Amino acid sequence: MLYKRSSALFAEAKKYIPGGVNSPVRAFNSVGGEPIFVKQAKGAYIYDEDDRTYIDYIASWGPMILGHAFEPVVNSVIEKAALGTSFGIPTKIETDIAKLAISMVPNIDKIRFVNSGTEACMSAVRLARGFTSKDKIIKFAGCYHGHSDSFLIQAGSGAVTFGSPNSPGVTQGTAKDTLLANYNDLESVKQLIDANAGEIAAIILEPVAGNMGCVIPQEGFLKGLRGLCDQHEILLIFDEVMTGFRLAKGGAQEFLGIDADIVTFGKVIGGGLPVGAFAARDEIMSFLAPLGPVYQAGTLSGNPLAMAAGFAMLNHLSQNPEVFQSLTDKTAYLHKGLQQALSKTQVPNTINTIGSMISVHFTEEVVDFKTAANGNNEYFKKFFHGMLREGIYLPPSAFESWFLNDALSYQDLDRTIEAASKVVNSF
Ligand code: PMP
Image 1 (cartoon, rainbow, N blue to C red):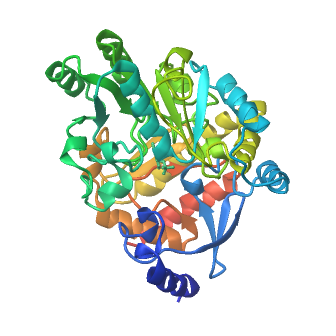
Image 2 (tube, rainbow, N blue to C red):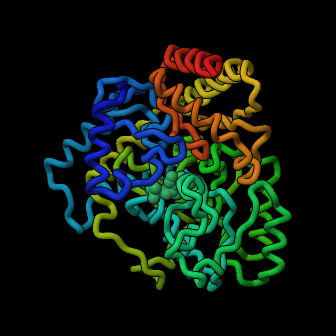
């Protein structure tokens, strides 16, 4: 049995942890079978408890942009840990990382650190409501902004996978303030704005969606949203939890040339430790406590270990901006190779790629949640497990983007392409 020890560990975990996991997508419910348990990881590779090696395409769902156990990050955490792991009192490193992040990202004057992407998005919306004195928000079907109540309205990835787009526990009262539009469909946004004139505080979206697989904004879509926001005094929130410090030093704002009013971060910004952040211009951020009336807090926010990891990561990226081009080149190479490998299958497929985000949908063109949901999930399951057996770790859901890391070599990419070819030919 290939995954004997993982299987035993999963059985034990299920006795004590709901479903055996601390975040649902890890349980493989969408692809069937049982998860592998990771023992350690280095560079582009993860090693499981059965001593199998995998080329990793999730990079901890994004943070490991420079590969696993990246030495400057690991060393910074070790050094900091020896000095005490949490104080709840200000530390210099919080200012160091804030200053660095602000220097890298366009359009932001101040940044507040939190502990997850969920917290970042939840706080950004509260801030937008406080700033505009309006209650409603527009989100897009298939975009995921964490698991706080107002976002669990047709959320992507895990929530879709589990067929519970409106989770029990989210009240009708909360749901009524979240209006749903279709990604890449400006008309659907205009209709919502017209029907709720003067009531919309913010439009929140993933500027490149990664939670319905990778879905790319079409020409004019983001610019159109910016225009509508300006026209109707609505704040535009870019959820850059996936795209921030990944598509470019300055994230999607820089990469796509569109300014947002509030930006949220997670993943890369914490170098693999639990960190999120939200940022905006002074005028907006000064509404936040203790300066302003909008309350937001966190005992472990700005934790020294997390800040040390994040600082080491951002520092490396700002000193080595060629990383972004290198990642883009590797992703384009993988795209081309996969396209050739998949041309041998009769099943329609489309590969969406932008920067270092890529995903394979087993359907024709994918531009929004509806078209993503048309994907042939049975085929994806077989593809996923075939790749896993070949030592390639893909996201265990068709509704997730793959993330490349810069430790991947062209040899690793070739091995991945060969594996894809072998897998699709075996069906
Ligand atoms: N926003 C986006 C775009 C995400 O992809 C995620 C998580 N995958 C979140 C927010 C929530 O982040 P977290 O899981 O750290 O709470």
